[in-house]
Structures are given as structure tokens and as C-alpha cells.
Image 1 (cartoon, rainbow, N blue to C red):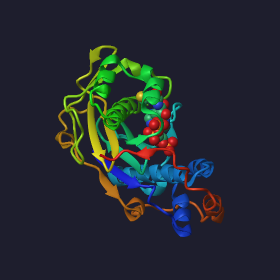
Image 2 (tube, rainbow, N blue to C red):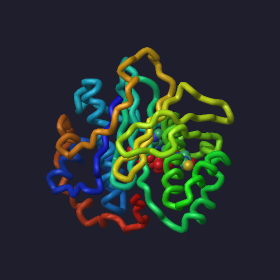
Image 3 (cartoon, rainbow, N blue to C red):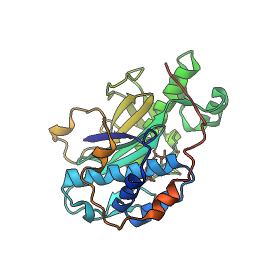
Image 4 (cartoon, protein in one colour):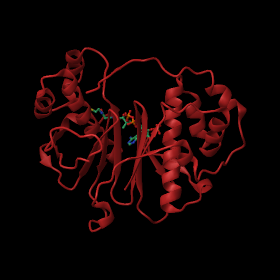
Length: 282
Ligand SMILES: CC(C)(COP(=O)(O)OP(=O)(O)OC[C@H]1O[C@@H](n2cnc3c(N)ncnc32)[C@H](O)[C@@H]1OP(=O)(O)O)[C@@H](O)C(=O)NCCC(=O)NCCS
């Protein structure tokens, strides 16, 4: 399993960097990135593409220029020219991080959420009441402090999203069918928690694994469907996230397109983003 994170909020691309990134991704993705209103969203999407391409070229030894990514009908990116090997990857972006998990074993889904307060917590929970089961709400409401309740809320949110993303089903899946139960009450910074279990429609799914992380005020969950090769030992020790710098992200990148001044001209005037949430710091 590979787990990488890139801090896209801290990244202030220079003209040459941004143009180089644009030369390394497929033209339809470049078009999509140009349509974002805010810089932060363009940077997050760009980081996601570069993470995927790096994972594929380094894990499968596929030359960078030969990587052809497609999207399923529901939007999940996949490698079009995957020949024999099993290889699953997924990305997520929120807060400061774009994250990727990839594995040769099982289907992967990942979700990251920054611990943030966006509005009145009781109103927020009321809006979300149907997405969680009774027992999940009991777990959310167990701590007395609202900020601790929110952290559990985000943890359960990431668990649900990671599962839905591993399936690749996207919007429309009724996440209230998923019922997660913790054995470890609180996530600890830089410790991987693996003992949360899932019931779907009341049925326990023990072959699914959920690797939960708390990194720099973000919750990250990697879900993996039952393994294709159950005796693969490499996958038995859950690893932590490696935080990459831009140089790492671009190390094996090879430009496939000509430099495009217009790509920088589109990006440079965008605003970074309005501040919406307030960080929860414990
Ligand atoms: C499509 C969906 C899975 C994306 O999740 P998100 O939280 O908005 O965004 P994330 O940052 O986690 O992930 C986005 C990335 O996931 C990938 N992705 C897109 N569609 C996907 C799908 N159907 N399955 C898996 N991955 C998908 C893409 O790489 C995307 O990034 P990109 O568009 O820049 O390439 C999500 O919007 C969704 O449909 N959720 C439904 C489940 C739900 O109701 N959740 C509530 C939880 S309580």
C-alpha cells in the first residue's frame, strides 16, 4: 500500500511550475482545472492528478507518457491501459491536503476531512441527521464538548466516504445503510487505527479494512475491499502517510504537451479562496 499526502494549500506555484504541471496531465483534465473559480480547487485537482500519475509510473513501471487515465460513469479515475496486474488507487482533497492511497490488492477508497467548524454545530448535525445511524449518533454525542463531537462526526464521515469511494458508486448511495462501530474511541496523531468495523444493512463485513489516520488536524481514512490475494504479507502492516514536496510529486513526471502560457494566464488571476470554516484545535 502506498499512502501519500501533498499540502496543496501551502503550495504557491511559480509560472514555470504551473506550466510544467499542465504539460504533464491529460488535456481534458487541464481544461477541467481551468474551470475552477478558486486557486485552491485548481491546485487540489492538479495535485490529485500528479499523485495518481506518480503512483502509476513508480508502482507499475509504466512510462509516464503512456499513462492514460479515464473516469468511470460515476467519476472514479482508473488506468485505461492497465494490462495484467491488479492495481487500485483513489485520491481525495480537503483542507490543506490532497491524499492518495494505492494498492495491488483489493479496491481502494480514500477520504480526507479537515476538522473545521462551519456553522452552529446543532444545526449542522440536524441537517446531517439522516446520514448517520442511531448508534453512530450515540458515538458522536458521547463527548461533552462540541469540538470533540465534531471530530467524531468527521471521522464517521470519512469512514462512510472511503467505503463509497472504494465501491466507486458516488452520489446516490444511501450512507445511512452503513453503520460503523469504533473499538478505539479517539484517533491519535500519527497512529494508524484499524479496529473499526462496518455493518451494511445490519450485516458485518469483516473482510473490509479501514485504516484511520489523524494528521495535522485532518482525518484520513483508507478503505480496502476484500483482498484479491489474501496471503499477500506486504499488505498486513498498515503504513503511515508520507508527506511529499513538489519535487517528489514531479520527480518522474514527463511533459507530453507543449508549454502553454494561457494555462498560467488562466490560473494567476484566480483568488485563493474565501475563508469559510474555523479550525478545531485541541
Ligand atoms: C464523488 C464523491 C465520492 C467525491 O467525494 P468528495 O468528498 O466530494 O471529494 P474527495 O475530495 O473526497 O474526492 C474527490 C476525488 O475522488 C475521485 N472520485 C470522483 N468520483 C468518484 C467515485 N464515484 N468513486 C470514487 N472516487 C471518485 C476523483 O479523483 C475526485 O477528484 P478529482 O475530481 O479532482 O479527480 C462524493 O461526492 C460522493 O458522491 N459522495 C456520496 C456519498 C455521500 O453521500 N457521502 C456523505 C458522507 S456522510
